[in-house]
Image (tube, rainbow, N blue to C red; front, top):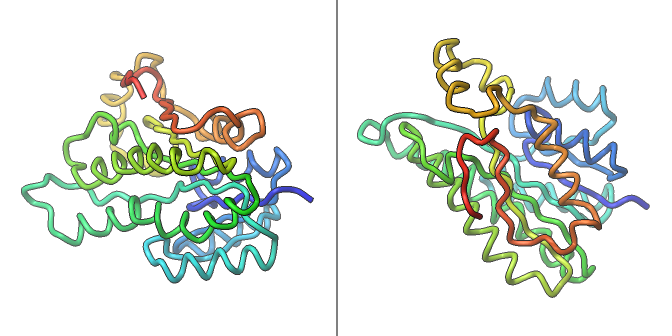
Amino acid sequence: MSKVAVVTGGTRGIGEAISRRLQNAGFTVAAIYGGNVERAEAFKAETGIAVYKADVADADACAAAIAQIESDLGPVAVLVNNAGITRDGMFHKMDYQQWSDVIRTNLDSMFTMTRPVIDSMRNEGFGRIINISSVNGQKGQMGQVNYSTAKAGVVGFTKALAQETARKGITVNCICPGYINTEMVAAVPEKVLESIISTIPVGRLGEADEIGALVEYLASDSAAFVTGAVMSINGGQYMANG
């Protein structure tokens, strides 16, 4: 029986690429989505991957989704915390709702999604938790104080939880993508996009499947000695140590 992998934000963009990669690697994938039912159903029809609707900022909704997934598919062996949103604006103009929405979805979700699976992983003596942060959580980004704060928090969450779970056969790692060729980035005005690409040494945007490839490795048995790692995939735009 194949291992069950849960991917939040798993029907679009980077999450879709991760879901497809894990499915191709032999995992039984469950993709959690937030609101776009039409896209989720199209993704399900195309891939055969089971989809579950849940707000990752809602602890009760996440617990219910995990319970349903476990009932339908079996215990969760791999969790990819990928879901995230932006509510950009300069801090002196930012209101609390913009701050709270991003913190709840991008950072609180580390707790709301991971807490319901951690006991089972500890009991099974196996688990792979892979958290998607951002280059802007490493270096900061003007106009994204809320987003950069949340994504930096994901790094701290990863390192602390990795220490707690290592002896239980559970690895916890973090990926910090740079600018990736997704719908969200494609919507950026052309001149702004050109300016962004000019700061990337390899001279292009990343591809979602390049993130998926690293997730596939971290989810595998081959990555059992990798935990607490913070891995950058940003084309050399920002070079950080861990």
